[in-house]
Image (cartoon, rainbow, N blue to C red; front, side, top):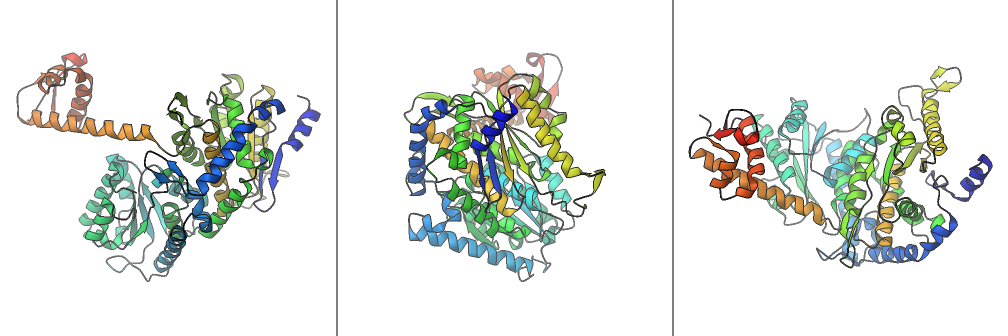
Amino acid sequence: MSSKEQWRRFQQYFLHDEELGFSLDVSRMKFDAESIEELESAHYEALDAMEALEGGSIANPDERRMVGHYWLRAPELAPSPQISEAIREALDNIQDFATRIHEGRLRGGRGETFTDFLLIGIGGSALGPQLLADALGSSADRLRPSFLDNTDPDGMARVLGGLAGRLDRTLVLVISKSGGTAETRNGMLAAEAAWREAGLDFGAHAVAVTSEGSKLDKHATEQRWLTSFPMWDWIGGRTSLMSAVGLLPAALQGIDVAALLAGARRMDELTRGREPFSNPAAMLALMWHWAGGGRGSRDMVVLPYKDRLVLFSKYLQQLVMESLGKERDLEGEVVNQGLAVYGNKGSTDQHAYVQQLRDGLNNFFVTFIEVLADDAGSVPPRLEVEPGVSAGDYLEGFLLGTRTALAEKDRESITITLSRLDARGLGALVALFERAVGLYAAMVKINAYHQPGVEAGKKAARQVLDLQLELANALSRNEGARTAEEWAEALGRPRDAELVFKLLERLAANGRARREGAGRPSEIRYAKLI
């Protein structure tokens, strides 16, 4: 394509909103007008489905619940006055609680002012808060954030060790809708043990974010925790960032949650438009459909040229892949839909996988995220690394240069631009992808709001743990050394010899079984630890 033709195409498909300081450029995607016209019917059906969703339709038939994350930034749109009031009340309570913490009116069990918070959660209950903390935090944070987001004992020990000497000044947020999520419960138990060992009353430091009447809610009440904040059944984990899940830690950290909500609200307004190329979320959904043939046959590489957005790709992995990775469509037909997401940040990735993107397998499209203002903090924004050139100028040069280098090899890309990365801009960015996911899912006729694959994984994990308990009990009876195959036979599970072998290896590595011999898996024997 000639530079003149690219300039014409850029102007035709460039969308800008002055109020948000937001732009979207899809001109380097190689679609033609006819291809988009063929999707027109699906586009309007998707907009109708989104309107019904915002109106309170049952969007998750598995659980018979609504999906209402858009109401969080526009409570007046909620389908009942009760929901509207609950949203407003929760936001007021979050702001009041954060103010009392910041002003020292609410303190820990020993009367110390809080300086840190530890958030315990997993998936959407951690990814969103982590994104906000990293993207918008600074050395001036009112409370320093830490996170337990897995059930890895070593990882938990590292985080808790980093808080050593400050536990009496650390507030703990435990986030779980059901209160039964294993990873979160394990992290809570580890934290309770650490506080107990330090001679501290954990309840005087703890806050729950959970559903009313959940296991966690009951535990918090019984242990006299400081307070609880709501998680409603119409909010899914991956779209919970603008509920108490994300807003409470953000407010404690000192982030402008009102601006975050305002940015999301404005983006929602922009993405309700009926015309495809005046609606940024519809433009993204159409580009995803074009790039992957409506089947996700190409990956989306997300490259934000801003260190503060290094976690954005990770956040999008859950939002996009958990929403769109579905075996069956709305009619129950097997379709195996999805859209794989990966990325880190620019210009770091120019020294990693951009080589393959330009010269290797063309099985992707890139989404560049450009931030115009440097906002360099303590580093002088115009510090020249060369005469007339700043470090930020280099970053922009790498973005535009990489985009050009990819285009030279017919590699497609989208560019999203923010005038600056602040709470308002990040709120808009999150809302854009939330809406694009919903529209794309409706276009390809899948349910974006359930996750049967995740539940299947949890069920399988429980079965593995039950088998491990059986195995540990059998070992404790000291019936002599046996191979994995022999132990599987003894447990009446002859088909699970490989699984039994893996479990025995773990037990032996952690001093809970004795391992005898070496060689092939069938030759190693295991017995009770003496």
